[in-house]
Every structure is written in structure tokens, then in C-alpha cells.
Amino acid sequence: MHTDTERCVRAVQSKDARFDGWFFTAVLTTGIYCRPSCPVVPPKPGNMTFYPSAAACQQAGFRACKRCRPDTSPGSPEWNRRADLTARAMRLIADGVVDREGVPGLASRLGYSTRQVERQLLAELGAGPLALARAQRAQTARLLIETTPLPMADIAFAAGFSSIRTFNDTVREVYALSPSELRTRAPRNRRAATAPGALSLRLPFRAPLNPDNLFGHLAATAVPGVEEWRDGAYRRTLRLPYGHGIVALTPNPDHIACRLTLSDLRDLTVAISRCRRLLDLDADPTAIDDQLRADPLLAPLVDKAPGRRVPRTVDEAEFAVRAVLGQQVSTAAARTHAARLVTAHGDPVDDPEGGLTHLFPSTEALAAVDPEILAMPRTRRTTFTTLVAHLADGSVNPGVESDWAETRARLLALPGFGPWTADVIAMRALGDPDAFLPTDLGIRRAAAELGLPSTPAALTARAAAWRPWRAYAVQYLWATDDHPINFLPV
Image 1 (cartoon, rainbow, N blue to C red):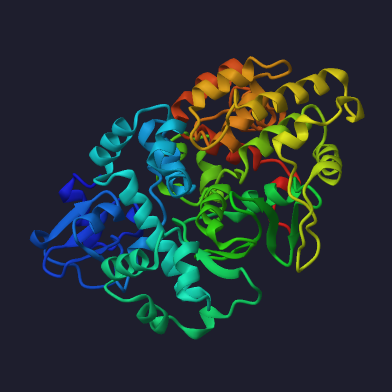
Image 2 (cartoon, rainbow, N blue to C red; image 1 turned 90 degrees about the vertical axis):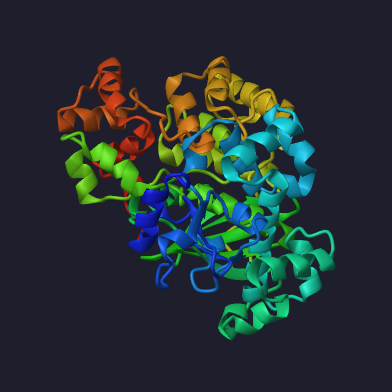
């Protein structure tokens, strides 16, 4: 979008928050860059130039605006809508792969050469993977500076910097303030961490956001010991690259309140990225709802409760396993099966608030499970053990870097995997916004009530007009039922 100057100028002049994260405005006369909704008086069009990423602005020598804080805007919805090289690379960078494995590790995961990845990102985003990761490190550093009392040296390494000098230079260059000056400007109450490794932050999103089905689904399917709904917040344990964490997510009208307790602060960037992905916070609800509203039979559902998101996951392999455990059984039975595995094979954790006891078992731990102890039919045991074996050896990889079509095809090749199981994994684990469940009983029942075709083939043909947002249409169709997944817990 940043190449459409006229459209960008209109968005800036109207302070349209819908475009935050889509592009960034660099002001030639001041040397700063802003989000489109910046509250200051818009500059003259001739003094504006537009970039596709914060990293590109920083690389061009612009510093972040102190008023609108463009580095904290929601991420571009493009990276959740697409499955091409650039989108997969951006999801991996957000997951901290460049900091942990370098650019060669990023390229290896994508199956391309380092030069190809760098060339593609530079062409589309105006910055290479190192610059994009550097911008992310700067944002993480700012968050830690402003919300924790940690010493600056600890913050530097927690944010992913290799040295304190690099940390100081980057913060000064990006924010035109030293780390100590950033801390001085932050309100003192924002640094009131209650425990070592604990911090509170706000996760922004594009309005509207309907929390009912989003948190309702997560709470209704919560695995005891791993997830819970408490005091208006969804809480769960997180398995992270350097350690583990516990997160509490609370819906508010203009943001999601996030309380994180981490065993290693180096996991902060990854934890935030996974929580945003879990709640689908980078979606563009206006574009999605406008297209679905064009169908006269869907329009009343959209108008009644706009802004539905797709509840996703913080661990793609975990969700794939849980999808198999939930085949042909009730929600309660699926939770019971998962809870048994968690108690027997999950890693124990200490929860200061009580209630959460384990991490969901790793694929390696599940691969060692004796299938005879699983209380399920023999055919589903085979499905379970085959899936776990393929997840453990990497032949099936539902991670953020996966190619959606290829992964879905590999899942369908496994015994016991039909279209429903593969598509629900595509929708909630892979993040495919166009995944569709025409054979789902709830979808067929909703379709019949609305006057839509109720047979899978006819419904799929009708749903072609909803592409590429069929996963969101699924949420609206499910919402016609009175199942607990559709209601925010009391």
C-alpha cells in the first residue's frame, strides 16, 4: 500500500487508525516517522514519504515519533493473510528466529538461500531480515525499559542485543533518547512489576473486536492444568525457546491486557508474538466483515456482532494433537483425554496464582507414550501415534513457517485424517484465513437455518464468494448456536 501515495495521504489526513501497521509515514522536515493515526497536525503532502515497515524507516535514518509510538502499532494483516515467502519470513522473524538462529537459520527454515530471502524482504519491505529483527529488538527493549525496573544491562541481553553498546546506540538512533531518558519519561506505575520476570502490557488491535467467541472458545475447550478462565482473564502456560511462561489475557474495549510471567526474559518477544497470534489481533476486521456482509444471508450475523476473530493457538503441534483427541467426541471428553496426557507427561510448572500446573507435553514426550494406555478406539490410537511420530521427526511441521497447502496435504495423507481434522488444524494452527469446514455439523445446521445450502459440495460452492475469509465466516456461522464456545464466560 505504501506505493499508493494518494491513498496514504488521505489516510494520514483523516488519522485513520485502520491503516496503522499497513504503512508508516516519514516526515522529511522533522526526521521522524509516524503511524497514520498520529494525533499531531498532519504535515504537508510534499513533506511526507511512505515506507512499508518501521525497519525501513529506521534504515532510512528516521526516528520514531514520541507521540504516536509507531513501533507499537498492530502488525500488518498481510503476514497473516498470505502464505508466500515474505509472509512466512515475517512470521518467523516475529517469533524470534533471526535472534536465535541468525539469517542462515531463517533461510534454512524457509527452504531458500540467504540471498533469496534477503532480496525478497528488501524488495517488499524496504529492509532485510537483520534490519527487521533489529527494529523488533528495539521495540522489546523499549517495552522492558518502560515497564520493568530491570537494570539496563539485563534489558539489553533480554531484548536480544549482543552488547550493551549496541543496545545503547540502537535505542538512541531509533527513539532519539538514551535508555535512561526513556525510563525517566515513562510513568512510574508502569514499572511496578509484582514478581521477578513479571510484567504487564497492552496488546493493541484494529477495532472492532468481538471477544465473545474468541475467549469463549478458548475457555470452553481449556485443558485443566494448562489453561483456565479466572477473574475475567484467560490464563495458560507457554512453552518458549529459552524457558516457560504463564500469560493472563483480559479483553478490554480498546486493548487486550496482558500479564506475563517468564522464567527467562529473552522469551518476551516470542511470548508477545504468540499471544497476538492466539487472539488473531493483527486481522483487519473492516475488510473481512465488508466482504462477508456482501452476502445477504451472512450480513445480519455480521451486523449483529462485527469483529469476530479466529481463535488460534500458541503451539501449533499442541493444537494438532488436541484436534485428534477431539475427533468424534464431545468437548468435555476431549478435555479429559488431554488432561490425562498433561498430568502424565507434561512438564510441571509453578503458578504463583495457583490453578495452572503443567506445560502441554512436548512432541518428544508424546512420542514415548505407550498407545495401549490411551483410552480411545484403536483406530484413533493409530492416528494419534502416527501424527506424533511425524511431528517429532519434522516430516509434518505446522509451525508459523509452514506452507499451508503442503502441510494440509501431508496431514490428509496420514491415517485417520479427513477433511474436517485437516481444515480445523489449517484454520487454528496454520492460521489459514480461508480454511473452511463444510462437513462440520454445526456449520451445516447453521447453513440450513439461514437458508444456505446444507450439503458440503453446495455450501463450498456458495462460500467461494467469501474467499479469502472463509475461516471468519465459520466463526459467524458457529455463533448461531448456543454452545458455550460462543459466549464470553461470566
